[in-house]
Length: 262
Image 1 (cartoon, rainbow, N blue to C red):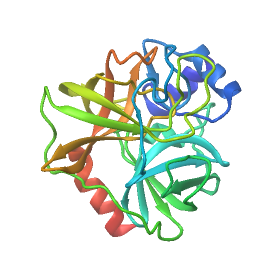
Image 2 (tube, rainbow, N blue to C red):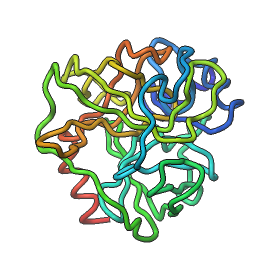
Image 3 (cartoon, one colour):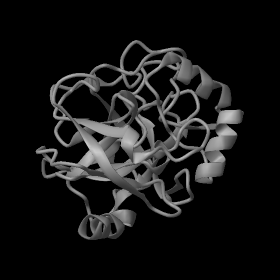
Image 4 (cartoon, rainbow, N blue to C red):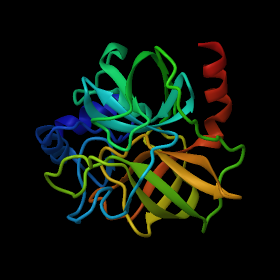
């Protein structure tokens, strides 16, 4: 309960913050309630990463968010100098804001711990009352960026989640390789960990879990991927019974303003 209390004080709700160490996962598990932060704990036993899902062969538009070199969360590249992730990912197990100097991202690799390149974070910004955060990089990521839609998705849509999260509910490490899970949209008027508008999904062929927090929810439009959500919180046991994604179109103007002014 100590971990959850600390997170709630810092965030105003439950969040998803994952560390790469099993000991850290155990601490988070002790604090889980009905809704969990998908950044620091694992999900119900399953054989594959993201708890089910499909291993990916490229990481276009994706970034592994690291703290002191260990996996914290998943993020998406919205420009060569900016990564989008969840606000709760920027808090430690005691509910304290993590110093920007401890943050970095790995880009252009399907692995969170090797390959591609690691870029340090120069500064960060969080949005009030939304589980949304932006990380400004100290150099160009030189990587493909994601598309931000102007309108949210619809109930009944098929969407796709990506992340390096843990591969089972208890005592599992993060997936070394990027995984995709297909999701079904059940609501577009849910609530994220900070009270912002959220998309709610259930799993089709895979379920998100701890470490997938901050990662993107994509909708395909004419063969192109648009990021409609940022993973905030979800099913306590990572069984795909309901996960909430901060709605990207609700924060699109804020995201663009941060990139233009910071």
